Amino acid sequence: MSKKLGLYIVAVLFVIYAAVLFTADAIDLSTADLGRHIQNGNIFFEALKYNRFDIFDRLWHTNFYSYTMPQAPFTNHHWFIGVIFSFLYKLLGFNGLTIFNIVCILLANLIMFFAARLISNTQIAFLSLCLLLPLTCMRTEVRPESISYIFFAVEFLLLALYKKEKISFKALLLPYLLIQLIWINMHIFFVFGIFLLVAFFPKNFFKIFIPVILISLINPSHIFGLLIPLNIFHDYGYMIAENQSVFFMQGRYPYNPHYYLLEIISLANLIVMYFLWRNKNLDYRYLIVSVILMILAFKTNRTIPLYALALVGVFAANLFKLKLKNCHWLTLVSILLLISWIGFYIGLVKRDISKCLFDPKTHASAEFFLSNNIKGPIFNNYDIGGYLIFHLFPKHRVFIDNRPEAYTKEFLQNIYVASLKDEQVWQNLEAKIPFNVIYFMRLDNTEHGQPFLIKRLNDSSWVPVFVDSTNIILLKNNQSNQELIKRYRLPASMFKVVK
Image (cartoon, rainbow, N blue to C red; front, side):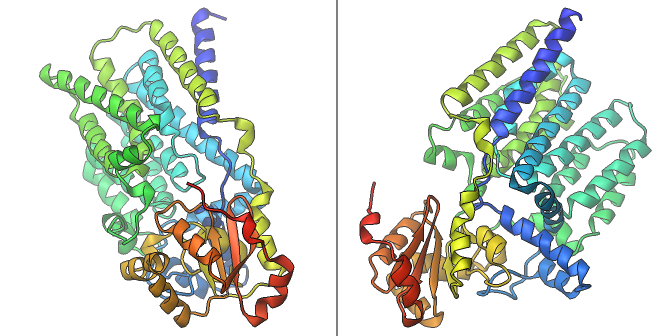
């Protein structure tokens, strides 16, 4: 085996290990969307089994899981990923879903590496991938967007191949249409497939653009499903962390190195593009892709991995145009860079791949709730909504869940948030809805979550009966709950306020 081949094998193994290390993370069902996605798939399969096609309309177009706003219009733009997640969960369990998520992100990175290699060379593409790997693997939760990364990378590769005249128009058109058909029913990031098409503006553009738009209408909401990216990111009346800007998150988490890495590489790419522009050697396709996605990434941090994936290709292409020599020292530098990233994750972040397995204790609060046949209505916080939907639906519906677009701004701001912050609003809400149980993700770190729990724990009309590392259940201190309260009441000494 040649030294060159041996070096590449070592490099690839390091990339795989680093990507798994960065991405491997245990599923926290108490705060994740995953439980709702799986339930979407479960309901889809049940409806098919019993020919209950009327359920599809409610699942696709209404706030299906809430008792507070059950008929509120909602465009379920991610319904098909629920079918995939449900199937995988039944086949492989939560740990299987974690592995599936890791594989998706790893594949997206490798596909973008091949795209970068096509438009630069192997060494520069590898350097670009190693620089950006911590960002492309930044969001570790099992989400629909992990498959979006694969679709994005494949379409970027297809357009790069077509630009280099490596594939025919037909070889571009058919897979692009198939991807967009699946993608629009899986995740809202389908819009970036259309964006790439516009940015690359390939030959015979309208011959592919028009079919892509038409096939994107094949979704349960048709034109509204196609246009949803234009109106989904509005002011919900409730702050969503993943939709906040990089600078907001950097102010809140000043020691998170991801944001500094993002800023440094973005600046480096802009500087390289400036020199290319001065030398009249700038490819405006890559300029449009990188600048537009950079603005989006800095504006909403949830798009950082997608921008980083694009930058694997764009930054490599720009470095290549600077006439960097095809030297093996670039591969060695990349390996050393990866070793540094790995050392950081192991030493400072304490990321341990062995700890990415799902903890069955996560189910404990739901098992307690169901085994004791606790009655509703439930008052729950935003984060735990997906967990409750997974465990309790259809027997119980939620007060709220983590789909802000499924609730009105008035509800989120003036009912949900106001009831947590204002004691009078809470009492008025209790008078309107006879809550029998408060079911909270007790680590709610919003400014109003912990103060609300402290008030309820000091409120004699509510009694804590269950608590674990993530969730807490309080029962209304009424006659119907006395037997459970007598059996499970938790002493006040268990709880204390800490800074």
